[in-house]
Amino acid sequence: MKLQIMILNTMKYHKEGETNWKSRLAYIIPTQEACSDNEKFRGYTELSSYRNDDKFFELIPKDFIGQKCDVTIQEVPSKANPMKSYKEFTEVSCNGKTISLV
Image 1 (cartoon, rainbow, N blue to C red):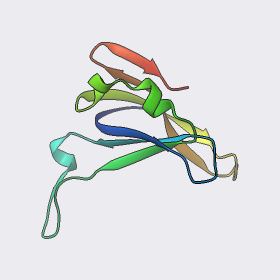
Image 2 (cartoon, helix red, strand yellow):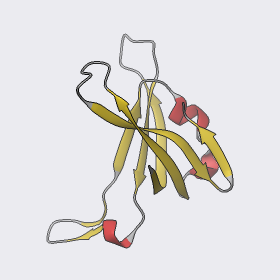
Image 3 (tube, helix red, strand yellow):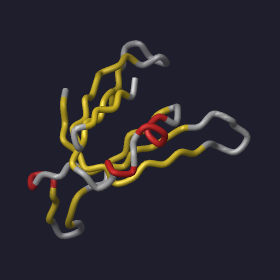
Image 4 (cartoon, helix red, strand yellow):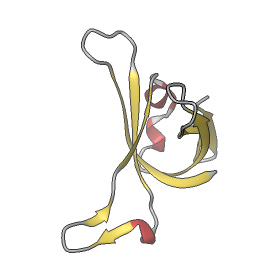
């Protein structure tokens, strides 16, 4: 599945006492339909995707930030519960460059 997003930021972090880096990608869906306007909220909802490695931070360059990008999303079975699945970003395309996150 493909989706157009605007990347707001990426970050890498690790919990105290752990050595493995994790990463987060914050984004919005930049369409007029995704823009809310109600009595308590106006604007775009910030969404996030998380990884158990630092690929979001290490592979996505600064020139992708603030740009509309196309992402490929793949459904992956959960290792903890095989009856469930989750979606992960596998590829980001922006400004004529494509980056694989697999």
